[in-house]
Length: 148
Image (cartoon, rainbow, N blue to C red; front, side, top):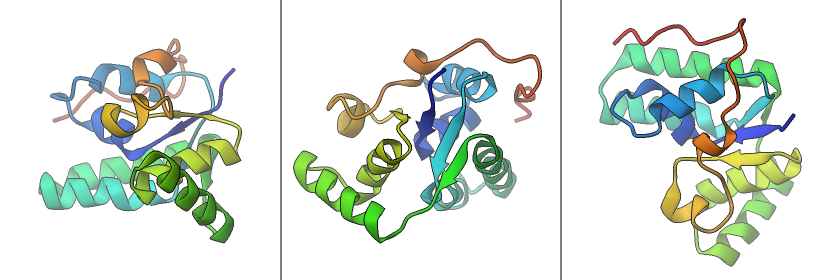
């Protein structure tokens, strides 16, 4: 089994049926491999749902997904050491500290980062797309059908 650390783009794709990674993201969330994320995900998914989508119910569903992931394999909390590592990754790869924090978090938990961010993460070998991390859905714990 792999430990997959999810960035916010995976959680957002799981909510957005128009996202090209929607189905793979939902399958990843419903599967049996352990999942973790960074505490930053709470802020990122809520920000997109509230500011871009203007959809408070989606914000609540997304926060519930972050909580479910945190209850699975864990929620990596940002601390001074992780932030220092993130700053080094950001400098080395020319990416934002936000994206680099997910890279640093995945490394800290010996996991693999999964992201839909092709330009900044996947193309640089820092993450894999959800289709490469998808496993068979577990009978228990599968996401409910979309209710949009």
